[in-house]
Length: 230
Image (cartoon, rainbow, N blue to C red):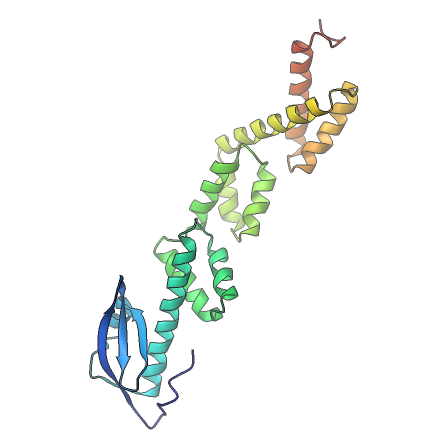
């Protein structure tokens, strides 16, 4: 946002009044004598020690405009975040797409993080909890990276034993689905194709081989038509 064109370095504006913003108790509207009104946070108004009647230099007006731009960006971010949880990178990218200046977007993300309203670690943990029975650890890590989550947060979310167990269950579920879809083929061919299928899904080779052995064992035990079953 550019500074008030009516105020030069040799002129002064003045705070003509301050009033609440209806429905937004955290904001105040600062009315300048030159005409424009700027909405800033109550915290910025207090921290800046502004007061009604105060004379403002061009630098003072620019500072108020800066705070107003950040407040507007914060409001935009909060409305967008109300839809679902977001990562810090997602919020930053959204504000950039909305035309918010890079510096203002960065300030908003830092403020949201400091207040705990954006928490990439909590986001990663909740993401893994919601999807661990559906995707492999590699796929969940990839999807989190696409959302801008750091490697440290991803590793922490995927490190617990329950996540590893859930990955094994997801692999087993995918394996049985593949096996039934290809049950008309010779078992050895299905097994080979299944390993490749699980690897493409992002499961590790160790997980893939272990699951294939488990499926083969259970298939032999429960399928009386299998000539190798005893």
